[in-house]
Image (tube, rainbow, N blue to C red; front, side, top):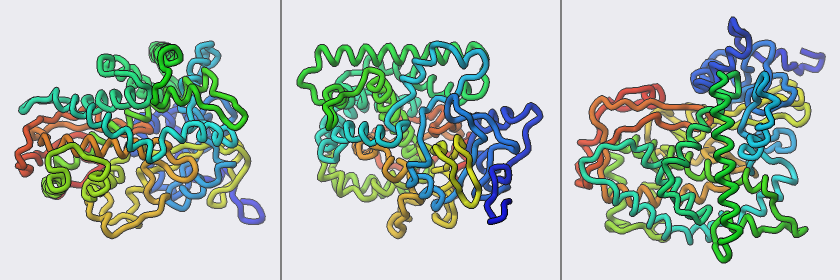
Length: 485
C-alpha cells in the first residue's frame, strides 16, 4: 500500500496458485465459473483476483495482462459499465497458447469472434448507429406476425404425450426465428446442422482459452471456418438476391454512415455471427429456464394461464396483448433474474485506473457477475426462490438487474429477444402443458451463457392440471434454485 492509501494489483486478495500454476486456477474457473466465483466472493470479498501472482489473459486474446480481477456488487457494475473509455470490451475468443498462437487460421477467429459488443469508442458508436434502426421498438413490432407463424410451425410438430429435449427444441426454434428475421433465410431445414456447429463452437471457447488437447484446437478452428464459410455464403446470396428485402442483414449491407462508408466484409461476418449467436442461443436458454421454473411452480403457472386466457382467449398474442400480459412479464423477469441466460460480463482496462482503491494496470481483465448481482440478498429477498410477484414491489436499478447488461452498451437486441420470448410462451402455454417425469435430471452448463445440458419434458395438450406438472427433478440445477417442499 502506498503513502496515500492506494493498493497495488499485488494487494488484491486471491487464492494461491494450483500445484500446476495459474493455469490450474484458470481451468477450474472456465470449467465451472459460478462455484469459483462463489468462493472468491465468500473468501475475499467484493474485489478479488483469479490467483495470487497474476495470470496471463484468459478472457481476451494476445495482449499483455497482469491478471484477472473479479468485481461483485451493483455499485461496481455501474463503475465498470459507465466508464467505457477505461473498461473496454473485446472479442469472445480468448488466446490460443503454444504453437497454436501463430496459426494463420486465427484470422478466421478474429472475424467470427468480433461483433458489436467487442468494439469500443467511436468505432463502437458508429457501428451501433448503423445497426440500431433494425432493432427500434416500432420496427420490432412489425416482426410479430413472423414470430407467431414460426411458433405455430414449432408447436404443430409436437404431439400430446411426446417426450422431447426442450432445450434442443428451443434452440432450433430460436435459430429459425433468427434466420428469418435477421437474415431473411429459412433455417428450419438446416437448424440442426447450423445450430450444432454454433453450440459446439461456444462450448469449446472456454476450453481453448486455456490449453486444450490438439484435437480440441483442430475442432475449434474447423468449426470457426465452417461458420465463416456459411456466413460468407449468406452475404453473397443476399448481395445477389436480396434486393427489396427488409431483414437485418439486408439493412446492414446497405447501411451507410454519415461519411457514406459501409461495413466491410469482415465486419459483416463478425456482426452476423454475434447477432446469430446472441439472437438465438441466449433466447433459447431464457425460454428453457422459464418453462423449467413454471413446471416446478404450478401455482404460478395457473396464475399465468388464467391471464393468457383472459387477455388472448386462446389466440396468438397481438402487440396490444403483449402490453397487457403483466404476469407473463413478471415471470420472465424473475426467470432471467434467478437463472440469467448470461452469467457474467468481461472488460479489459485500456488505461491504468482504480477500482475500490486498488490500482489496475493497463490490460487487466475485469469480470463482473450478472448472476451474483441477481442473487444478492441485500437486493433480492430469498434470492434462490422463484417469486415473480416480487416485481410488484421492487424496482431495481439497471445495475442491480442486468440480464441484457446495462448502460450505453446494453444489448441492442434486448427488445427483439423479449418480444420473441413473450410470443413463444404465450402461444405454447395456451396450447400445451409441459411436465417433467419424476426424477428427471437437469444439469446446467455454464460459461458466459447458462443453459441446460438436457431438459427432458413431456408435452400434454393443455388441460389446466398444473398440479401434475411439478414432479421433482434431480441434477446440478438444484445447486442454484430453492424449491418449496
